[in-house]
Length: 622
Figure 1 (cartoon, rainbow, N blue to C red):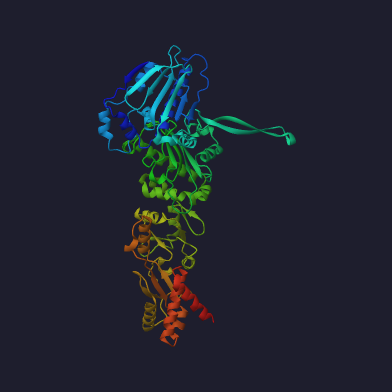
Figure 2 (figure 1 turned 90 degrees about the vertical axis):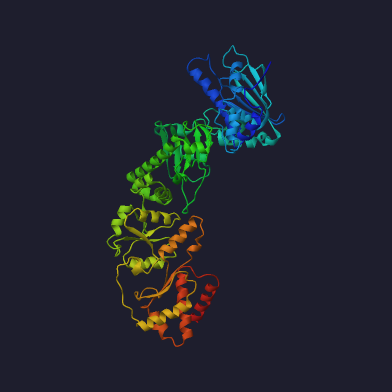
């Protein structure tokens, strides 16, 4: 037996490790199992080179809990260590001085180790750690190393005869939840799900059947529970995989989810190494940011699911995995933000997504259009937030009209420019964001031969502004922003059947009945007699600014609710009925009723006002 001191230059290294080595103590299991995988991979490599005699046998890693002893065990049948190697790897911490470590990171709660301290993460959860190890070299005896959380250790011979290493953590009271099966299974599933060596954790019952008919018997068998998939499909060649392989793996990542729309298999070895699969999920009509759906791995070891430094922001809606050995296992966010490879990966992923979408559009446009409702959010968000993606996506972004027809930007401009170019030579793109409630406005626009787009997602406000800003000489106008004859302003005016005096009288009547206009106003227009007697219009600029501020979580108070009341001076209810009523009270009541009818058409009549309107309607019917 020998005693010694771990070669560090500060007595308080273990308190530092416990507090600062990792921001999350649960990482210890990832580190220790990863070390076991490395040891196993090394013995396999030696066997392939013929340096190990005979068959290396079962190489599974095993995790065990002894609740009575309050210990957690990590066992491997890997390369093992000699006494000399234990001295080298366990007794000499891999950094220049503990003082440097302390001075650099004592105030940083998010530090993840850069100094090869993975094994020492065990002391974040254990009061004592035993390492029992036997080298693959036949002439090297087994040894046991024990340390109870201070620089002193004990090393002595051990009777172990099997090649490999067993690490025994004597879990402290503070971290006793790591002695629960469900907790360890949770961590193994999170951090070790795709490690390249089989990991056993307990057993499970498998059911099989023998015989047929009345003689059929159910047989239950206890088998090892292998908790990981050592051969994930992102490490395979796309040519060797079927669509079923990809959808099955997606279900493994996200059980009970709807099948993905399509996927991109990433595989690059220059100027950096990267593999992975990104899936386009089905999204609802709203703009849903589903965070932490892309997992980052380094050689199949889970690092994080917070990948916003690696994946372009607009692709955070995707699901899947990215694996790159060029990103160290132990990374901090500041490292990711500054690392050159990370920036290259970000650009590469954006490029691959654009190529995939362009390919889908070019090879099967009908299928692409069928998927457009789900993928439009990705494309529009990408165009707004990523200039290089915008350049490529301009060729495959689509606009959909209310006849369910799809157009590229160029196609749509060509379609409407002859009939929808205003006096300022701007092409007007009319749109509806709620076709059901805007039906009368849509019908009026179509009477003029105008086409109307459907723009009904929350990101469309930003997208329309983006298209306008890019200098396409187009302007988006919502169908209820003005009367149909003025949606595309061409200076074409219809004469009013009312005299100027009667027009002033009508405007005065409605001005008295109208409340809460915001910054809007009451106006008379000589519309077609078949148009509505009173219309509510929403000023495009004010409404759009209010909606964009609301989307960004800002106070929209500086842009109050605002609408205009437009009276059709040529409608018979105005020219023939209203003005011919005998009493002023009757005229005022009728003006209020027509205004309420217009508000109802826009779903703006609610509460007490709606109740009063219904009572008035019943009175008129009687």
